[in-house]
Every structure is written in C-alpha cells, then in structure tokens.
Picture 1: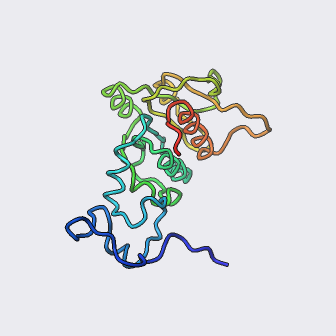
Picture 2: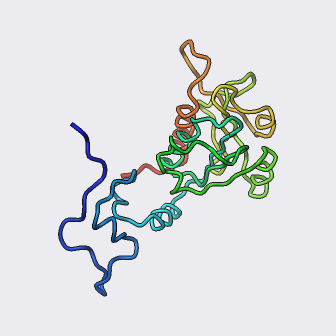
Picture 3: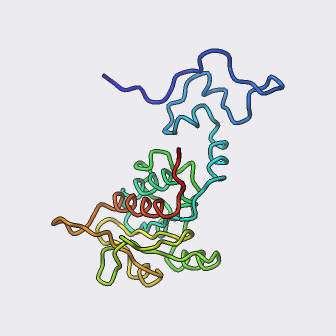
Length: 209
C-alpha cells in the first residue's frame, strides 16, 4: 500500500482573520489543492516565505559549512539535517553548484552562503566572531564526546572520502572526531554531520514539548 504524503485539501470553512480575510501566512493554493511538502504538521498550508520567517525567530547559533570540491552527493544529506536542527545558515565552500537531491528541498527554508575558497569562509567567520570547528577523524583530532561546543560557531565538514582539506583543518580552532568501535575507517559524511549537530543540540538547544 502506498503511503500518502502530506495532507489533502482543507476540509470545511477556510480559516479567516477578524476582518474575514485569509490569514497572511496561509497559502490559498495549498488550502485548495493540498500540501504534500516535506514540512512538519505545524507548517501545513503555510506560505513558503512565512515558514522561513517563522524559522528565523528561533534559528540556533551554529552554522554548517561543507567543502564542495568534488560535487559530493552527501552534501544534500548534511543540508537536510541542518534544516532539522534549524541551523543559523549553511555554507558551501568551493564549487557553487552542489547536488541538492539529498536535501529534499529543505535548502529552500534555510540561508545559504557560498565561499569560493576556505580563506573566504575564514574571513566571513572572523568578521562575525564565529570559531570554526572541524569534524574529521585525523591524527590530532579531539574526541567529540565530552567536548564543549561553542553556542555560536561554524561546524566544518569535508567531502566523503578525503574529509576536510588541509586548509580547512589549519583554519579551525579545533578538529573533532566521533569515536568509532567497528572496523570501518570512517562514518558517512551525512551520518557524521547528524551526530555532531545532535551533540550541539544536547548542549545548547531547549527540549521541545
């Protein structure tokens, strides 16, 4: 049996403001046709711009930066997770174009920045007093377990396979590694990003009811 995605057309009288008009955050087309977007129930039938504006009122202090030298398809997964944790913004370092398929359109609800080189990201972060925290299991990296992540920071992830570039590692205030217990050398970049963002949330994000 195929599972239905989203919700169908609004059932019953449409919601209205005190003046009888449709509330500004709602989308008449979605009310009429249904809403199959990848959004939580709270945002069903909302206009895209209204969702972004509402998310902006509660963005978290961390940013996510991903190096994109080889058009890694895992970037989309990282960006999707950044949306789930309501990151302040995500940054693409290297090629401007990146594989958006894995993001499942979640990039449209976030703020995107592009930096041609690592040095450009470093300058952007320095202007805003944001430390760079790299994530890679390289010699000299610190275990993430027990590490106190800054509330405001940029989490830097490398490509699947080679990991963070030497330039990125040199620019970071610290480089963290996720402790592993099996035989594989590394964790998928998308999975690693989810672990690190959750680690940040455990330290700084309020628990939702």
